[in-house]
Every structure is written in C-alpha cells, then in structure tokens.
Image (cartoon, rainbow, N blue to C red; front, top):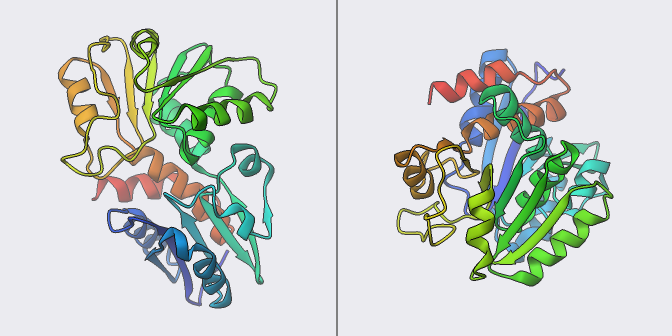
Length: 283
C-alpha cells in the first residue's frame, strides 16, 4: 500500500469534462488517508501516442482510459493481462517502474453492478448491445463467461459489429451471437425478445442526442435497460424506459465498482468497494 508520499493518477479521454472519476478517486483516497491526486486529461485521438509517452515520462503512477482510446491504447503499452487482450480493450494502465501494464476493470465493474448491487442475473438471459466499440467488447466478454443464452449486437456499421462477433467467437464459448445493422427490420424482433438491453454508445451524453435506437415500441415491462452513461444520471433512453415500467440502470454503479477495482491495481490495496459506493452516494 502506498502512503506518505504524493501519488499522481488520472484518466484520459475525449470528451473528459463529464467524468466523475476524479471526484470518486480523490474522495476515497482522502477517506483512506492516502496522498493521491487524480487528474482528468483531455487527449485527442491524434495525440494519444504522445500523451501516453508523456504520462510515462512524468512517472504518473497509473491512469484510467475512456472513450475513444480503450482499443487504440493497447499497442502503446508494454504488457496487457489476458482478460484485457481477450476483451480487446483497456481501461486501466499501471506504471510499474516505467513499464506500462494494461488491464480492464469494466467487465468486473459491470458484473458487480448487475449481480451485487441491482440483483439482475444474466445467466441464460438474452442480451442486446447497442453499439460495438471497446466497452461492448469488454461487457460481451463478461456475458459470455457468465453463460448468457444469446448476444445480439446492433450497430450502425455492420462491418464493425461483425468484426466484434468474430473476435468473440475465437473465445470458443458456446453462446449464440447475432449481429444486425441498426436499420435492419430484424432489430425490433431482437429487442422485443431481449431480457437486458445495454447501451454502450455515447448517445445520451448530450441532451439533444438521438436515442441509441430510434424506436421504443419493443419495450416490455419485464425488461431491464442498462446505459453505461452516468452523466447525465438519466439519459432519455432510460427515462423513456422508466416511464413505461422497465427496470433501468445507469452507469454510476458500474463506474464505482470498476473504479474500486482500478484503485486496487493502482495502489496495491484491497478494492475499497464500500468507500467508492459511499462516495457515489455523496455526489
């Protein structure tokens, strides 16, 4: 455990000003008496390589990675753990004496949020992902590991969704995986049959964003909607679902849980889950 000296941590992404991570990490560090300063860094895609080199050169102890860098950062790291490589996405980087190690705590945070905090089981369930980016990779990997009945990936680009399917099939986990283009008429049937629909796009960050899927005619009262977005705390997608009686979950509990697991990696302490959820409730 690190104590008695200042530790600089951070998060990189674009956009980044919406991130609650600095508040959560700094609050927990203060509670635990650890001298940590966690800083947000806005990093454009074109500047990612220079930014990673700069953070490494400055001796930053570790940093989280958010959109759009979770996939693109992998070639810039010295090592990645097996789960991060299988997911094809990194959200946590630890600097160990100048050697950068990549991890992914999104999956563990997602699972903790669903199973432990919201009591939503996923085994034998039909799951639909809206989006096919880095977060979709991480969460679909976890779903496969937990024996869901099927996964459907709906995306504007069928080629990108198909590529994700091929990557998931290499894991040799026996689950039906389907990909659909967003304007395919079969999307409504897939959504209607889903037990859990997960928005992993950035649609909803702004109040004037379109919905992650145009229609809501498929809503069923026994469905659950999960949106990885946490600021705003209720996107229009979740608001419409709540109004029609669906169970809705925003990204805050996943954020807190994945942050606790990242904090564990950064500072070599047991994941302070209760402290992160307390910090979340105080916001």
